[in-house]
Amino acid sequence: MDSIFNELPFMAITVSDKNGKITDMNNRSAQTFNNSGGRSLIGKDLTDCHSQRSQQIIKAMQTDPQTNVYTIEKGGVRKLIYQTPYYKDGVFDGLIEFSMVIPETMPHYVRDAGQNEGKK
Image 1 (spheres, one colour):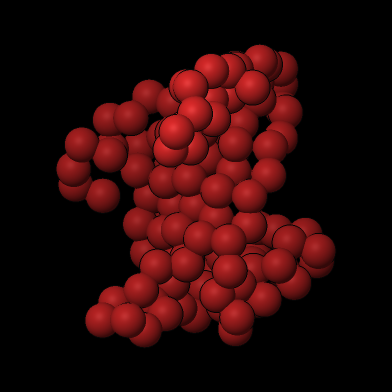
Image 2: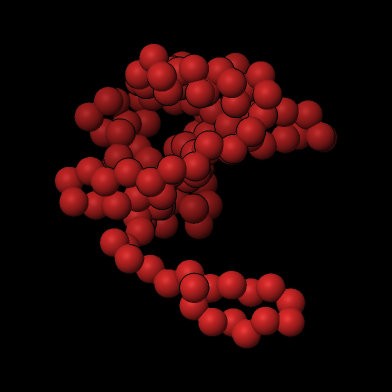
């Protein structure tokens, strides 16, 4: 990933093709998965490093493209995991995972037309 995305300090980005092969990782992703091989994971099957439950979710996302979003906490660090399909010329082409560090609490704003922009 040769771009500004490589230098994001708090967001790991991992990309796989439509067959589940990892095709790209930014620096934070390679660092996050260093114990599993880091950048050497490029070309490997995405499901190889996931539990049976996660493998089923990945397969479902590949056959019926949908978004999978959740939060985790590991080592005292909270993260938002956002996994979503991407498309090329309107055709499913793979999955991308954004893993971003989030604070324990954070504001939530409602920005509907005609309403004040207050916290909720």
